[in-house]
Length: 282
Image (cartoon, rainbow, N blue to C red; front, side):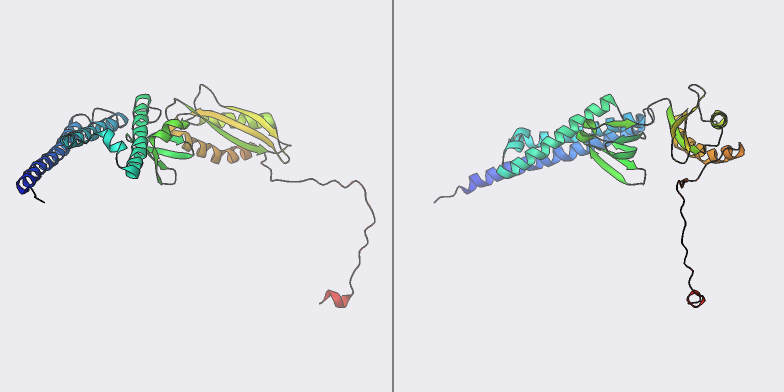
């Protein structure tokens, strides 16, 4: 068996050269991406809204790196298609992972184009509610109301119902409160309407309204409504709900406790047995 030592050394040198070139290409692409990102932050970050600039920065940064990696692998005969289908079980795993990544990437593009939510918006995505922290091409991060950070893949964000509490000019506040059956309904309505009219954040048009929502067992339930800017919705609701009891009591309107009236139809003699004095002192 004759081993072509010179040929093996020559082939190794050729491969070594390709590896070095590939490494140089990858390092260069990362440096170029970092340089362009710094330039964008100096020139564009202050001019564009955060919900527009941040996705644009991610697109340029990771796009340059991806092009560099693909360019570095090309001399070895490695293509994206080959990576997805080669390698038996490993190829299947990579294929599924790439499929989800591509799905999240495409969904991220649609989210950036349609913009149903932006960074800083108060939203509900499926069963997650909070403030949008970041929208990348693969996932969206939301800080929940109790401070937790939730990462949601963009494919799920795009396929679920999105409720945006900020992207509207006004949001309605609704508060239910009960008054006693002996109270004057019209006086209670006027009192609550005047309270909302005097509030600085309750809009004049559409104006506030109060109506009877239900006749409950222990109280007449009134529903008070007003419209307010979305940015102060929670503060307005808390303030109104806190002041309602005071203004109603000042107007002579009673807010009842839960109560139950018992009526006895038939009366009968009740036999009472009194224990003797010795048992009483035990």
